[in-house]
Image (tube, rainbow, N blue to C red; front, side):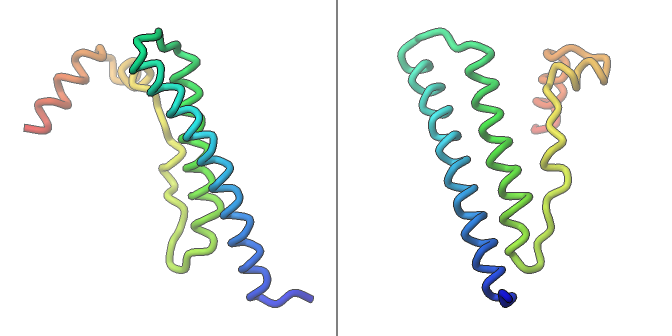
Length: 108
């Protein structure tokens, strides 16, 4: 039977592998985005969606796996509540320009 220490080591190794796997996806998506920006090549909505998915996947690993091995830490519950600005604007009944203006006013 495995000891608590052995289970913790297994959890840490598993979390580490998950973090590195998701980090590779983030790096690939970031590289693609940066190269297209620098070269002047057209960015597509799929490029941006791939980048966002990779970030969310990494965050999901941190919140779901890494927090499990850190004493005194709970997953950040709101970490998965991503709402696109367009959807948020529709919900508020304002345009994206109005939302940006409100944000600028709030940072003064």
